[in-house]
Image (cartoon, rainbow, N blue to C red; front, side, top):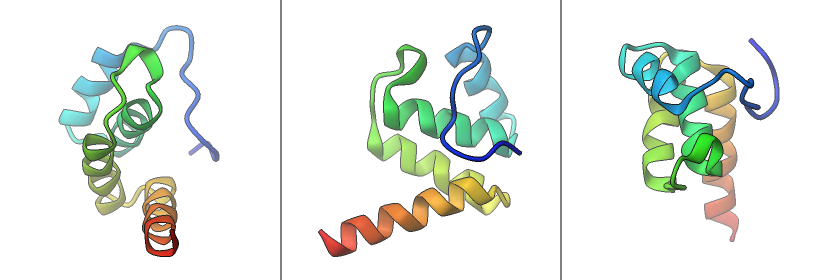
Length: 79
């Protein structure tokens, strides 16, 4: 599993990532959350939906998603 923020490959598409995420692929769920949070691949930025997908990925054991969620909670708690 790559570390650091998701960087889309030239052949990535939001729709293919979305299909894989809905099929239960934890890596795709993390990638979709990153797209939604950061507005990648022409996604409309949506923090609420990004949180949903980070939580799903983290629940499936995706460590980077769990890390992002922990940082998100800390940021909200301390700001």
